[in-house]
Image (tube, rainbow, N blue to C red; front, side):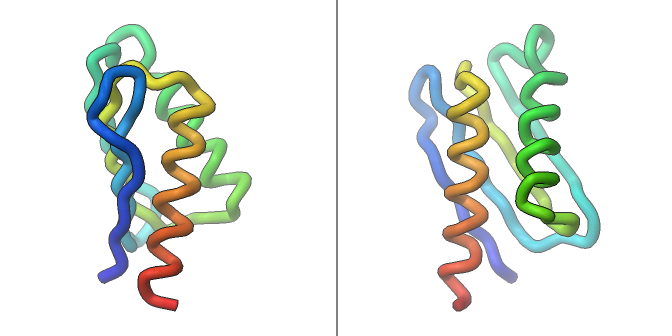
Length: 86
């Protein structure tokens, strides 16, 4: 199974872990889930759309990351997943 991650558990960052999956499944843990959970999920879904990815499990452990950090961590994790098994 292909799996990869990117990011840290530091403040204002997020740890993004991705793996192969049938369909899209997103799991978010965040210190600001009530306030920004929908926005975090939106950024993840839009990034997956931009990358034409339809089959992936995304686990995001957020520590207050801004949108561009969430996107960058997701893209990096996806790239790493491809590199591991290239």
